Length: 493
Image (cartoon, rainbow, N blue to C red):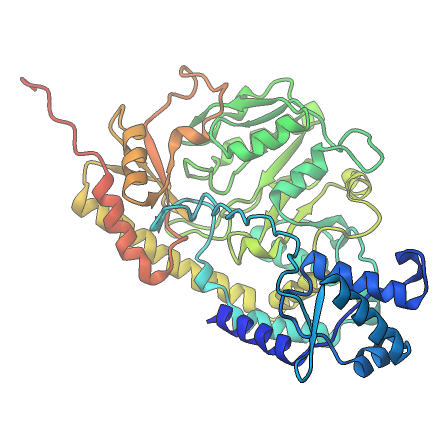
């Protein structure tokens, strides 16, 4: 439909002779105005801007548009007719000759679809919320209010720390909802968790080293993308063993910093045990180190009491990092760092003198969204929706695959399905063949993790949030269809 409208417009333009832009600057070449016009017309035909059959404007119209004499246009047309570039017939006007061959366009190479969407009917990968649930009406209302109330200086260069309106709103919200102890001046706005890591460990604008340096302790299971980002910055990561109580922080040694997901370990699930939360703070104080707290899934909990931020135990030893990627949408590219006072200046220096990453208008909109209470309402609504999806997943597995253990479902947007030994790779392959996108647990394992300290187990990581509401049932049915059968008991048992 769109192509037919475009073609119709182009045919109409060819018939009536649409406005014609030509460059007659003196720099186009030697000669006077007529020579410049002749060259410009010839170049327009040669390049394909004027396609064969295109009707040119009448002498008088083009002369008036270009500010030249009518005879200048007539002479240029006549010269190009003589050269064969144009044709002129009584009653038909002047047109581009059909034999004038324009510059061939390069063959259009189809773009590859994003890996998430390529060939998959059911997307059960972790990492994204339900895009169809974005609160469009409430966000639009916040955008309008923010724009109407914005002072004029908002439209100038942005403060690298972020808009004060958003930092004040976050200071209040994080204290109330996550137990974070901070002030607006200790908050720096960024475009998400990955951007925060780049600011903390990458080179600054002057080419110097990052704010922090390795080695960095990380959980034995985590996002490979983050490990790759750190490796590219020259940071060595050291895996910490994991058990049912979270990261084994007692294994911290000479590392300068540790990265944790204490609210809900990614991807295995579960909060960091209270004793270990206190122990990691003791380690940071004794070593002069710092804890990077990734507030992953901190707002989505179902069967347990809220778990406050580790940052609340010692604001001078913890860098608290959060974003709206899971609660609202990764498309907003909005995140924040709550920093110990000693790091604020270095992070701002690494970011640069002006805000170059996050839209100021989006910052103001999020500030209004939080202050108006719309953010709290949205989180509560999505918490109920994702809990319902979690329950549907657990019920489907209990009915169709009771031998599969489900873990990590007390909070968050994903679950880990424990599989019989040796079946993870074949299950992921079968899912691919059936159009089900999911991740194997092995993909998140640190390459240096040892079998003795963190035994590898077969499993898959299933996202409960990505499919739209109407597609979720079919996705669960497809998932159950690719799971391995129960292990046959050994004879004699």
